[in-house]
Image (tube, rainbow, N blue to C red):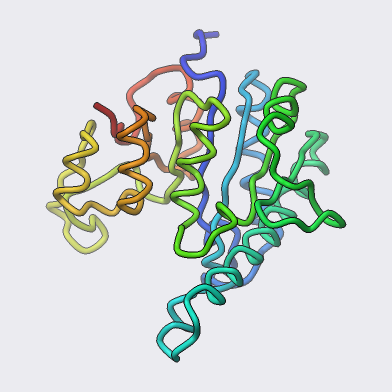
Length: 238
């Protein structure tokens, strides 16, 4: 068995990863599929944190387009991420993996409040930690929450899980001539306005030298290969 390159990771998932084929709602079978992928790397001895979005349940832009207050729309999105986190927690625990959900907004009857030292202790004890409710602040995305938590909790890499095998110079579904990047600098991502993560998250990772690996989670071997240091997806770093 090849030696692991990364022993503690943060996995960033979109809310759509849990959705039905329509792109909305929660599909329990999809949650189970993702949980199995997490279990596969958990069994390798990797310490895993997860941040998940809310796009399958709530898109704040819909509210904003109708004049909704931005902070209200963002708080609604935070609550939706907790529903997704609980769904994934349930799927993991049915597979025998001890899991903790921590939330940036306190809701003690359903999850622990986010406490950095407690989260690190869970990781050391072999528990998967799912971090819900973003940063707990409006105007910040779950991309930014993922970058922040990755640095706070000592992740060695932030893995952005997508349905594409890396970052391209244009949409490969539209442009068959699109070129895939194996490596990018943070500045390249910002200057080219590539759709990796939002600019706040990219800047935060750049300032703190947190590498971002973009890969296709639905490629059965991609995640395991990446953790062993093989060339997979697109690496964003210095």
